[in-house]
Image (cartoon, rainbow, N blue to C red; front, side):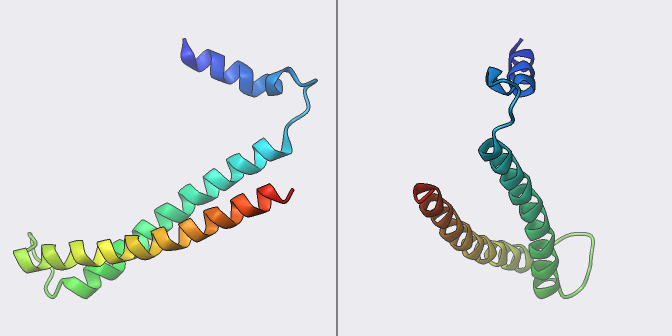
Length: 98
């Protein structure tokens, strides 16, 4: 199936004499770092927004709490997107200069 094609490509390094492509490795590391960062961001965001928005822990969120959390997360995501766009364009510039 599809997964066997992927793993044999991955294992053989595309038939390049068994050399690993450092660029490819760096890309994979970057992806893993990005995923870890996103998970941490989500954790922090949830934490901050819940503390900010929820006065009394109860079984359910009332309407204003839900709105507050949605707004809070939106703002958080906006700023995160701004940062990651800047980061990505810097990566592309560096790659172009290589």
